Length: 224
Image 1 (cartoon, one colour):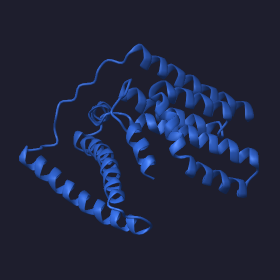
Image 2 (cartoon, helix red, strand yellow):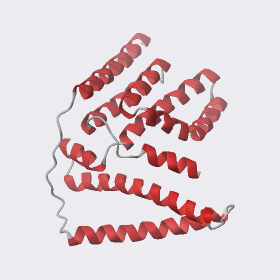
Image 3 (cartoon, one colour):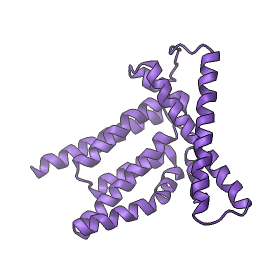
């Protein structure tokens, strides 16, 4: 579990190439394309390729980390359907995990500005970006707490009970500290957001995503 937390922390690192607005447009479009195509393998491969364009090896590492869940999903699907359907849906889910790693890599500041660009109230956008930022912090806290407990000789199931108590205390203390910081700085729920101009790479990803969505629609129309 410790190694899994270390890999998750790397995936959630703030290193990010691309425009957050483009990612927020492409992600629902590609997800819709996958569902419209009924989890076709070629659509899943295209989504995986687009995710790797943005996140690189982080997208594949996210799939590896989620492999226990994917294996459980594949086994459950196999009990309810045939092997082909189980394999295609599992591979489709893996492509969604890779796509989710792109969303997870967006820096919180860029995420809030992208939400404001799409006319989301700044107060709500700030809360979403704060939740994303704190999730990354809690992953690091959980890893550090687990390392400390292992160094102290803790073993077995008891370590998870102590981890739960430690993380609950940490979450409460961090929440109080954040509230005090916002209050002392006079947080009003209003701020200026600036989004940079999309690059050629962003436009290329938008084009690929549109092609995948149109291809899925063509597949559906051909089935009717």
